[in-house]
Image (tube, rainbow, N blue to C red):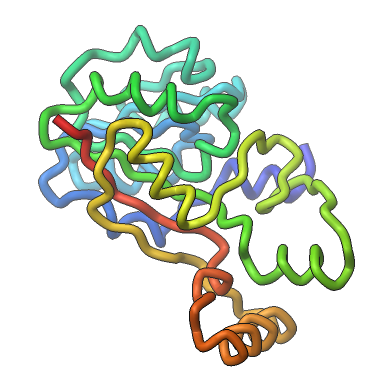
Amino acid sequence: MDLKRTKYYANCRPEMLFLIPSSAKKTLEIGCAQGNFSAQLVKKGIETWGIEPNLVSAEIASKKLYKVLEGTLDEMINQLPDNYFDAIIMNDVLEHLLFPWEDMKQLKAKLVSEGVLISSIPNVRYAKNLFHLLFMKNWEYKESGILDSTHFRFFTKKSIISLHKKSGYSIQKIKGINITKSVLFFPFALLVNIVLLFTQLDIFYMQYATVAKKLK
């Protein structure tokens, strides 16, 4: 496993913590990797579950969380209790799924009536991507990042909203996260917005974080 992939599995994602409801008692993290994000919730007394397809990472996570199911979401979803979780967390997971809207629909049954689906989704309109596409004429898959070679789906802010609506959810909050700090791409994003009267603010953000409730 290369260094970038190792860091990926060990990521704590502190920028997503503020989205977890203070009232949450039971959470499920899909694609929990080594469990470092949900381990932060354990310290708050939350019953944390995880699903992780990577065997090594799942074993590490199982030492930190309440329960970890080793496998893919499709393989494990029937082992999850219905009407149980206050929050289901998908940090950079939906883009790895062939039919994310179908998985999101099935997860509705696992949430309590006021439960929320929390997600971080890469923004394909991120300034770095646009720069390479427009000026370098390049769309090259990488080991990690927005053009990760394991991504099946790509999203913009607009299509993220559409995805949730199609899947039977109402977005309560959507926020751009991980703003570019690059000495090249920040000025590029700023210039684009000056020229286009600040109508393209989404290109500053690498990802969008969302909180959504299931429609009744």
